[in-house]
Length: 100
Image 1: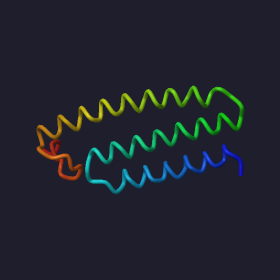
Image 2: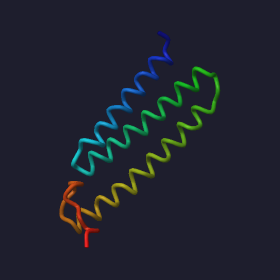
Image 3: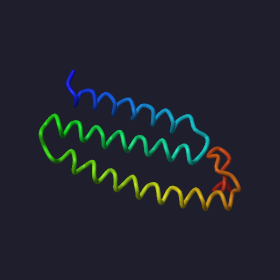
Image 4: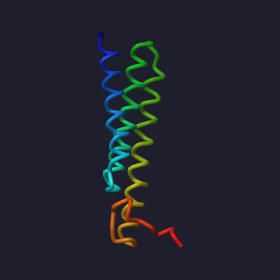
């Protein structure tokens, strides 16, 4: 197998690990890290598909994904800090602030 197909398989494996992490984690920071793993897997897949096709669009999309991941990390951590101050926990299944 050539290098781009191995990168594609690695990207798919990272994506599957990220989805597994989102579905099984209770900790909000762990869920945020799993979402970061999913975004990094998508960027890796875009780069490997771009290398297969010889186009520059894959690298361009990967840069947008990296910028989106940075924004998501900042906003997600701000939300987690605000929730930890009000709810006194960071476990996703124990946060019930919207229940009336």
